[in-house]
Length: 386
Image 1 (cartoon, rainbow, N blue to C red):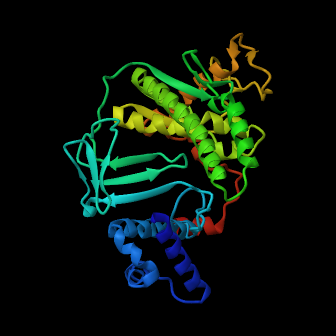
Image 2 (cartoon, rainbow, N blue to C red):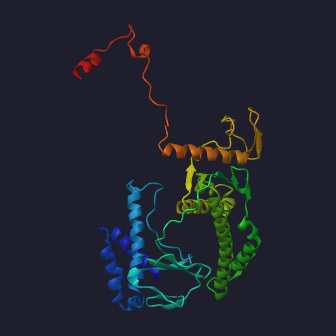
Image 3 (spheres, helix red, strand yellow):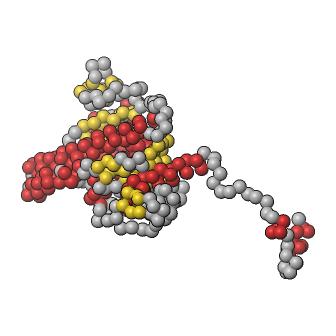
């Protein structure tokens, strides 16, 4: 229901563009695909659902178009945004959103009342800290339903500590900390590869369009959901522990999109670096910690964390090396220490520290004009004109 209104709106604007007509405004689009569509016999079932859900579908489409227009005009920072496109029929994820205008309600018996749906039994993961402003009901590919609430919660800062840490993310070790600790990569996808391969083979043997194939699709989706849930739960525990034990956390700004196109793509996606860094960022903001990303082009693996000497690039097979100053470095621990130093330097600069040397008056011998210098008439005239 939700995505159908989005598809109808996208198709209406696409046809208007192909016909050379003006861009359909939000109000005209809503009138065409919702109000007028309800009056037709083939679309009268739209009246059976809440109007807020249909309006929210068009609101998401409008946001996508605005992001596209601001991206091509240069007003939007970051990567270019493509125009809205139709969803794949293989995408089994569905979602609907109810705002405060829909008048959803949480009952005293723990149920969730949604307009034109009824009372739903909910297994609450935690009590809500405040009254929600909207709720999104999501059905994932595995057939599970989730209710996501938007609430305004105040920050809950932790007591200040003295420790600071730099984190070097990798594949063999998921995270190497500047204090020497190494966190092994759990590799959830690799561990479940055998079961996933068997389920995928069973799916490929099923006849297309049959009920057995639909059941096999759900089995594959559930297996992938278990992998994603395990990875997310593990990253939540690790990120919470790091934020709790350190006052400042610094990580390297990795180009995950680029690494996902290399031969290490499967391992990179299995690690889930982007999701982990996002957890660190929002938990640090909520808990009163400092979080920053360092420049991805810094030679953290080539620089000696003791003397600062850049010793040149090294192949990945070199896991330890000795600097001419005599310091013996573990490759990953040394990189984590350099990330910590770079993060501290950037934090000090952002707080108003002197980035460049202070200006000094030039010596008298440098400020004067050499006797043999050729004077320009234009320069003299310009000086007198001033």
